Image 1 (cartoon, protein in one colour):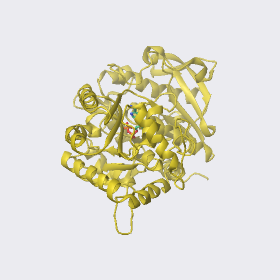
Image 2 (image 1 turned 120 degrees about the horizontal axis):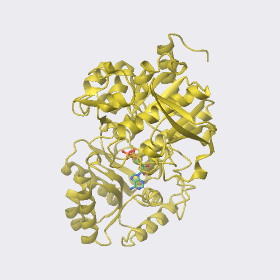
Image 3 (image 1 turned 180 degrees about the vertical axis):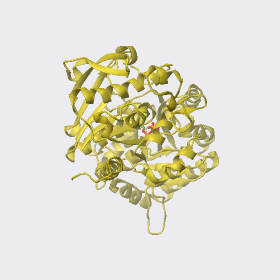
Image 4 (image 1 turned 90 degrees about the vertical axis):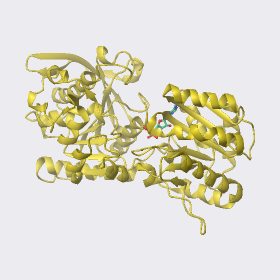
Length: 487
Ligand code: ADP
């Protein structure tokens, strides 16, 4: 199949969270399986010119409406597995280098990316079978494939829309309708209209041929008012077209046996290198060099979703009374950043905090910690718990979304499980879970070893997930074209 991916993020070029990793790994797997995969993303200002390949010789005309055409340029570079990445150069929108940032023109800039991608396909004659749009920034794609681009060659493409995070919906000014030359009837509640503005995610939920999200549990949760962020009625309406597929991880990038960011390597048969990673982590974050102290790692965007305020609530008491260390990396909400900075200041040697983004340190935390804490209020899939398991670091997670689907709770007796789960987003529940972890660490070290090996042996490769996407693509083609295409 010819598959066009539309995304604002693609690791390693531009990454703000798990979305960039997912689009990269899925594209690579699909290309390796023999599909013709092209990813269309902005050429952000932070990218070095030599990273973005060769320039398409002609200017690309983007038709906003019959009277208005904007011209952009497109660069193309090879991507992993035999895929290709197209970079949209349009400096007014993407020259500054930020992916999201505090701009007010997101509706126009990302919708322009969508139209540019489709018009580039038309201009070059590469017509996709599937347009796979990721999250709200690409939400316009299914809408225009059903409307303004329906009767062009790209209009035969089926659209698949993946919800990576329903909280961010792309609620933008209604001016975008006239700017993009969209018909006014799209500004209605069963299309793009929402609270007096345009909701790009909502448009996609109504128009995409097929919908996916990144775990089966999250697929159920978002159909409820508690997790639906106001769009649960639309998702209930389309439940029969919605599939939950857990993300895989890039096993080359996240591999404790060969990770270039680690001072020592290890496998489930020989965990000795993990101790060296722990020592390196302790040194790196100013923690006391104690091999016997359990280290609890955290890597996250510090926002309400991740529930780390619950951890900040209980840490003063825990760090005072219990024998443990905390290694935290993250950035986000300034109040929460300050709370963690203050804890590091108050508990030197026990609480190490780095505010910011640091991929190398993220790898070291995954390897050097004993436990990994993710008390998310909601978690569509989550990647860090998968990385943790692969690194023999037991995740302590709230049983929601992809966390519930991927972490198996510790059961003693015949020792089973890969981590520790708790159910409500309450600090006392998190405290109990951490106490369980301390018990496991100090009183059941045999079980701890078994759990580590269990976790490391789980299969989180992309192959299975990529096959599930292929199945969705084929169904989408069937629905769009009314017949199964030749295989
Ligand atoms: P989300 O996409 O909601 O942020 P995920 O767990 O799915 O959460 O993915 C987060 C990804 O971003 C992981 O690859 C994680 O290692 C990375 N990450 C998050 N914050 C940081 C940070 N401060 N420094 C380095 N990597 C980070």
